[in-house]
Length: 123
Image 1 (cartoon, rainbow, N blue to C red):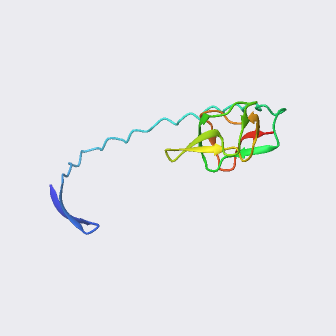
Image 2 (image 1 turned 30 degrees about the vertical axis):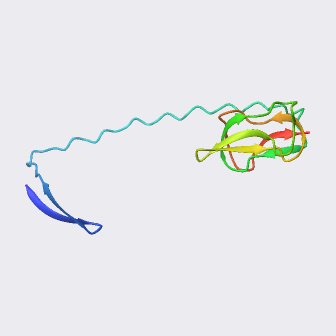
Image 3 (image 1 turned 90 degrees about the horizontal axis):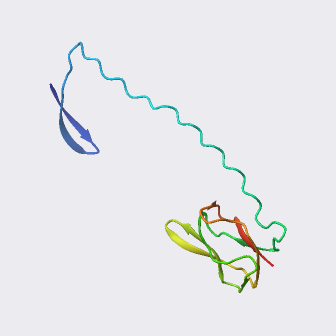
């Protein structure tokens, strides 16, 4: 055995290293099987494209859709929550930018979204 003194980030450590004989063969490191590529997700079907409204309700932050608060055909007032997204373990409401009727919901619970993504439209 050999003793060494090692300094790491200003801390001093005394270590003892065991030497193996000449006939020692280290075990080969296990080789992981190559991971199979994930199957591509089918493209989502358009959600109420024909009834899409002219007022877009956009995500203010990237995250995941946590809850849908409004339904197609429902009247909403400016500031009413339409969708709730989860970002950095916080629930963030995405609100109607003005009064209107929900024309389409363009996201589903669990969808990963980017900031600025259109989550719904209003008429």
